[in-house]
Amino acid sequence: MFTYLALGDSYTIGEQVPLHENFPHQTVELLRKEKLVVAEPIIVATTGWTTDELAHAIEERQIKNTFSFVTLLIGVNNQYRGRSVDNYKEEYTKLLEQAIAFANGHTSHVFVLSIPDWGVTPFADGRDRKQIAKEIDAYNTAKKKITEAHKCHYLDITASTRTNGVNSQYLAEDGLHPSGKEYRIWAELLAPVIARELNK
View: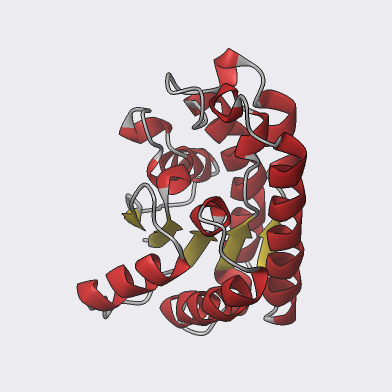
């Protein structure tokens, strides 16, 4: 049986959506349809977490297991709190290396998702949307470079959130977080890439 560790923040737990609609659970559902036997995902994520808070939580939990594959989606709260990209690079690199260790050193079994752009959502009304987009782009550029240097997979979900973040069907009730419909798009991007690696 394949095992899955999902590391992140509100976008990983699926704030305000039923558990089975978050992207880790929908990804597992799609993998099972491909006849892959995958256990329920182990999720280490909480709304509001920054890179250092996720690192602290991982340390606290003292996770000793390794997993067949790992996803990592973190950084939006660093941007929201106005932290520097340089600080993010340093802390994100450590988290990515931790994720690789959880994947038993298999870099190709670590799947990183880009940071969604919350600046397009109704929640961001009255804020500088262009500035938010610019900062998220800077974070994602750094994230992609580090991810690819470590030979892990990088998936762009930011474009989808920019297209759908203005549509209430793709948003949770808070007008900020994605709905299960948006998470489905992420899962449909992720599942084939994960399946390809697991079938090797």
